[in-house]
Amino acid sequence: MAAKRGATFRRRELGKELRKLREGKGLTLQDVTGELGFSFTKLARVEIGENDLPRVADLEALMDLYDIGMAREDRETLLQLHRESLSKEPWTPYKAFMPSKMPTYRGLEQDARAMRAFQPSLVYGLLQTEAYTRALYSIAKPVDETNSEYVEQNIRLRMERKELITRSDSPLELRVILDETAVRCMVGGPGIMREQHDEIVELNRLDHVTIQILPHDVVSYRAESNFVILDFSEVLAPVVQVDMPNTISVTDERREVQRNIRRFDAMRESALPPARTAEFLQQLARQWE
Image (cartoon, rainbow, N blue to C red; front, side, top):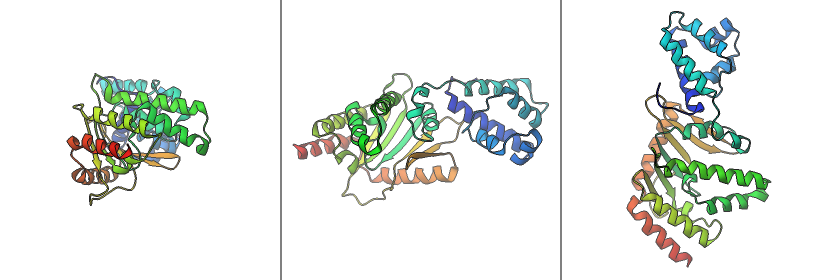
């Protein structure tokens, strides 16, 4: 088996293999659900990795239907994927405080090899300082009618997610484009913003992190919403995540992935080179002073 992966990654990997086996036998979802009495929605969600398959007996039934002569080692591989897909994720304690689909994204994020992100209005989450994050949630608290526990849990979760790029062992390769609005929008006051800008500069010095700013005075294509592209090994296709009201969208649909790659590349070409990030932020800090 490959290196240890999280349950979400394994769940999608298992679903991919089950779909490949089904299509290889020339069966539709309706064929399988009719034969085994499964719920159509259940099996469809299992194949795209949104739902797990709690009972090993269900997996055994699918393997028998798809290929009764399947090699023993192939069956064992699927059974091992199934066991790992049911393991507990490290972020499980925060699940009650996450918006819809965020648990799926968080599970995939931790196993991504590389990430490309665009943020038009605020500093991207993995770049935020704790003070900046706290200010964001504190400002929104009375409007969104959240409580102190919700705020503290989300701050803790965001700081833990940031370890993806600060860990010493196989850190995530990160490329971020920030619209000028994201670093100019005052959150928490000048002191917090200066600290946040210093953090961006420091992170940009890491070999595996590239941060670019898209200034207001540059004529360029600009995406209307933020998005993230997660890249994995050859095992899984890239995934795109987009924020939506009260939820997020997570998809590996090829057309949507390619569309967002084009959007990112168009803005990357127009954004300031990474080396000019520090200079830009220093000029902005002087304006506040």
